[in-house]
Image (cartoon, helix red, strand yellow):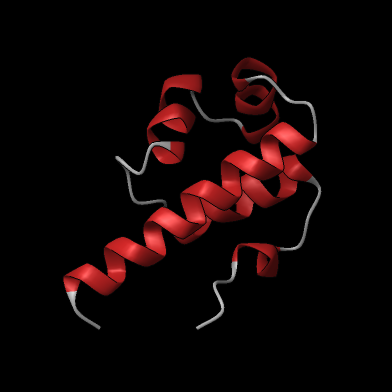
Length: 75
């Protein structure tokens, strides 16, 4: 996988994260508290400025009360 493919996947995950957070009615503050991450880090994730680790994705999924597979990108 090349860099542009990775960037595209990251952007799609970030968009999905933001949509899911908004759909759940969670502010950055509430979401960050539930995920045990800083609000500024979540903002960076949603903007595509940071690449989440597997552990971070697990925390985000748990905070959103979804399965980790919800972040999967279909090709």
